[in-house]
Image (cartoon, rainbow, N blue to C red; front, side):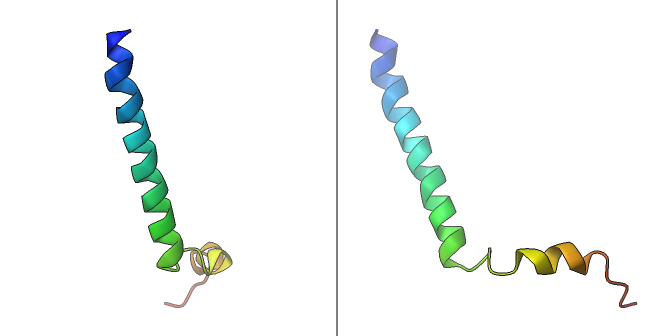
Length: 46
């Protein structure tokens, strides 16, 4: 039971870091053009 005192805050902190990273990617507009990346690899502009 003593290990839960350590594991619960650590897991909450890691979850908070993951949420903060996800919100950062949304705010920096990294999900604006998901179709463009899919078609860009097929486009032959060389």
